Image (cartoon, rainbow, N blue to C red; front, side, top):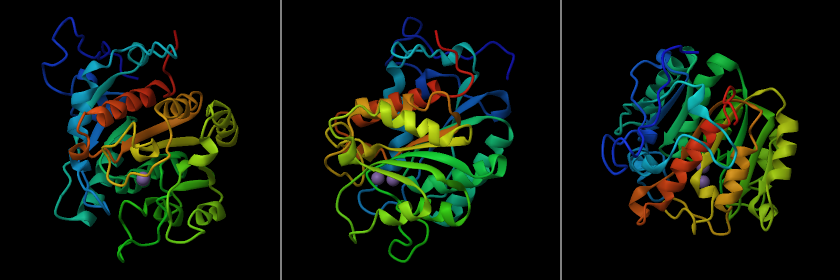
Length: 317
Ligand code: MN
Ligand code: MN
């Protein structure tokens, strides 16, 4: 824990919310992850997408829409800035001309972050980036549990013959032993498939698959109580694909599917992770070119804040 005075988001009474540098939550920036407990990190990468690209612009737009976020969570009482040194670490300098090189750059970057005992919260970027992040997490924690919100299972073996793309990260993660498969839950899966058994492969690996239809008309708080029981004290990663939410709430994404989760259900999932040993999280697949109102990025910014609020050592008031 850093003992300097704690970074705080710049308040709207000190500088108008539409002004000043657009860091995440108007936090100070940091260069060295060793100086902070939690780092917001942008990964402006979308060369793993299969349909509409644009998630490379996600980090910048999410930061812009995060300008309204205030320090205290009025719903849950979380007060992350009362105990944690949090800053915006900026963006990972991906090589946008080369997927393989970018994956290596991301893994190296996150190894540096976790080695410094800094918890990464990631502004994506398409979902490909979860693979190098999980590789880096394994170097510190070993395999991790995962709470994965998504319309898609992202367990394809290949996409157009390629082993690494935004629809394959969790197949590779299982093969590489990055996940505790019996402590992985996928929430919000739906839509059309290539085969009728598309969701059976993750089940065969031990994942719990909760389809969107199983979530309709319900609070997800009871589900999350079961998830907490299942995960126990294992280190857990939260990977939140914005397309897990219904496109009515989050249209700015590359592969939208109808009939998804509500914003309230998304909040219940993340808030339901309170008490777990959360070692990192991401919010991926925000594609601002399809986000004409900015609302998708606004939702994303809030969900990233909610991930911060459920980290260990966050006090509740
Ligand atoms: Mn995904
Ligand atoms: Mn998806």
